[in-house]
Length: 287
Image (tube, rainbow, N blue to C red; front, side, top):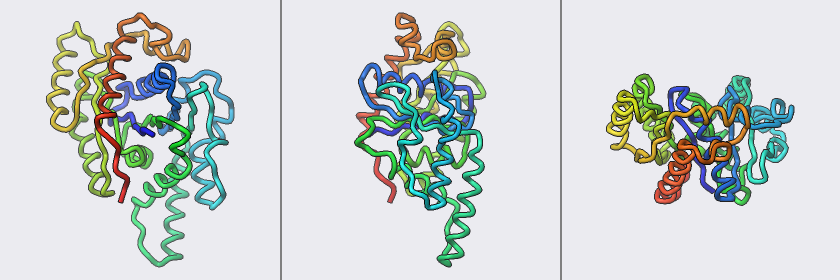
């Protein structure tokens, strides 16, 4: 089972859009079983799909975690939304702060009961262990996480759980400025948790080949990132087909506009990303 987080520390780079399209690519083009984890309280990923039932806003990741903290038995299946024969989603909600409060209370209760210190990082380990237990490798070929763009309990748990991330960047000045901060986050997590977290590739999204500034910033990205991670050769051009395919038809762009240049970009980039993941090998588990 391949686990991958789509991540960057700045919003608006296209993480959700590419996570959505990559999952559909695996399900449609490669007949793989895909589980989406929506780890962004804005819930943009789940809103990208059509015909989402009301239970998506009730049976969420938060409810699952809180029930486990209350020592109630939990399984994954009641929380899943089947949107395609090969695609399931585990939704998040905009009330994840409730989970952080419950986790803090849980840690304090354990410290008082066991008379030993538990650091704040135990929250991440608790969540990772829960995901490891309930998501069975025999059920899915891919687990894809759409992460929120910051240093938070959800985003750091996503990186620790998957151990593998794809950077989604745009050739814009403010997006470029976050590169150093992003690698500081990765290095901090690796040191703090003694974890192996691999950046399998950086994908340049929203590229405008006719614009000098776009080409220049894309080149800057390559120069800054290549010492730490591969940069995909295939860039994905800026196109209105991409958001329109989701907002109007709730489908990936390679299905709604199969002959478009951006669809060809995306399929080529995904095939390249697959090759990087396969060459990367398995991710070691936490000690």
